[in-house]
Length: 190
Image 1 (cartoon, rainbow, N blue to C red):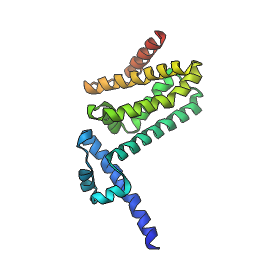
Image 2 (spheres, one colour):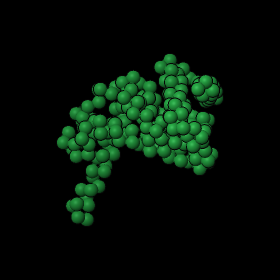
Image 3 (tube, one colour):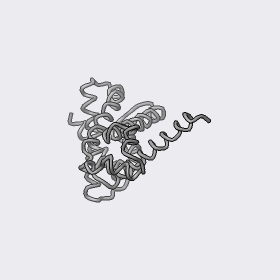
Image 4 (cartoon, rainbow, N blue to C red):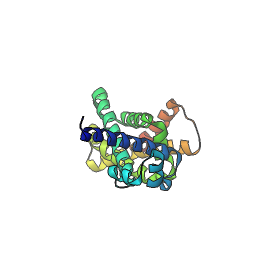
């Protein structure tokens, strides 16, 4: 084993520790409280080591957003294989499935006010990801598809956000009914 091979193993391990610690910090701290100094300290590395992997904290947030969108894309593609289409019901299913992949993290990112910027980025990227499918399925213009997709995603996020803010527990069945009612009422009125 050459020293280069050994060195190439360590950065991947360090990068993974940075990601895991970053996730833990998101769960316990507000957006502006997360610093490179605190992150490096918790990982047990020097700040300079952090900069070997990331330019800044925002780079970690961007990587996290990319991961969320990749998960959303995988869920939509698997759903398309199963359902062969995207409908209002399946769109809601995709969002719920995405949320369930890491409930604690997504609850914090999507429903804590300090992470609104991250939520907004993810929201817009999910809309962009789903819009072509909605357009094709409903046979509507791109502008109409953007409106419908925004309505679906906004409805989901708002219902979930309100439930979380008020510490309400809603059964899956009731949540589904609320979301479908909200979405169907809105779309009928367009």
